[in-house]
Length: 193
Image (cartoon, rainbow, N blue to C red; front, side, top):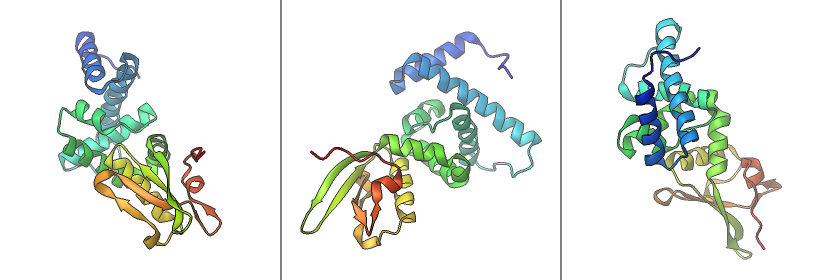
């Protein structure tokens, strides 16, 4: 289905605004805006013709729209992209993305995991006496939360985790028994030399 009835000049203005405010290139901004528009259409069609519940709050409606948009874009939007698309505050954008993850994590799981893996900065930490660790750092709260959720699925005793939520950092043991923790998370091990 093509999007018909879209004003080309307004679409171009939207692309330019997204590019300018997010730092995305124009091609990426155009793809994002197209995915968002298709997501809005998919959300509206699902509301009219679907069988599931209908969103009853603005945050849930926005999360549902982003679910469709992320599926169209084949990636999870960043917090900054959500801010710009919604013309809202960073805290509202984070709330919408957190709601989307809570509601649609299973459907968008691979996209969430890929975004988390791509964003992770891994640094060697710890020492031989107390145990070698990795420190994972994330640029966004939603990605920090996704990583923490994945780590909690692994057989790592809670006392071996050191989380610094305000700094979006997690310190994890390099290995637990014979489990390579980064490998289990699907995160590439950095060169420590």
